[in-house]
Length: 210
Length: 210
Image (cartoon, rainbow over all chains, first blue to last red; front, side):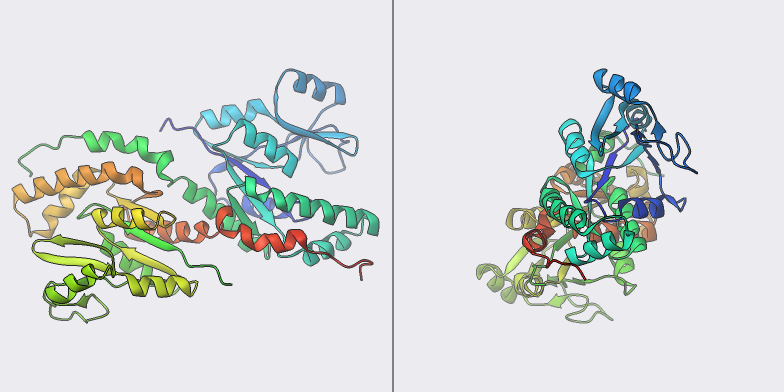
């Protein structure tokens, strides 16, 4: 099979639980896609492994990669860069293996420009009250910051129209199953598989039959 | 939820095993769509129940429904009409329930004209040799008829491009699972669900938070 892998872009507003659902998806061996590790300039935290949690790079290294066009997408948050290195993604897709990105909404829109035939999946909160509860539950943000995050979530939910699928994160296991089924069924889309059938259509079967 | 149900059109070449896969799909209670019983003018066979296996009607009754525009699709095979009555389909979709049709390729193309936003699923044989074996295994057709059926299957496989999904019938249980996953994930497509989120985007959350 020399078909290229699918680029799967998993995104959603801040606080919706992208990371938790992604971990659930990769916690079982019944998936046939690979996770693309992001690159960041933020300091490595205790317990984090370079190349597993993130590729940890200096600002200079990261900016050099941007300059060379080696980032599929990137953004700056609170003074640190986060992004997706292009080489790993391309090499994996070329092997016919699907690549799974978990990235922020702004990054997903950059990818959409470059790879319009990717599979764009948007994780949504069941409702905004639930998202607010989750942000409060983290205990890391002030009321003002939470209010800003909710406003930004609303703007990001409005960008859902740029995606192919919307999955509700009402329950982590269910949301993970839905995402896996989406990836499975995208492989059955006629525009992706029709090439395989041209041979069948033109095949000559010998007569007489056995 | 006042969204309309999805019209699911399950089709594929003669002999591919549409009926067997459809029975497998409906053999378990984990589906939320209803099967649309076809109408036919062929004689009722022993054990068949009117309204379950088919709606059995006379030629005159069937032709009257055609005249009244009451058939979503129909075709004539070996002197008998087969088709899908429109009323049941529309009433069920209006209730927000998905409707599942298992029909021939020609009928599916008629439905595609009338309901372009249906979900069109094409069941394919793993290869033509397998289809040939299956037709021989039935023991009902002569070599000439089988050769004709294979030629027709090739023409029908070429029509796959009109469909949304192609599912291989390599194993009945697997094929049935794939079809169920397709129907599930079609409900996550952004163009089908975005209406639900307009409210969320415009929602005002009270401050201060509890």
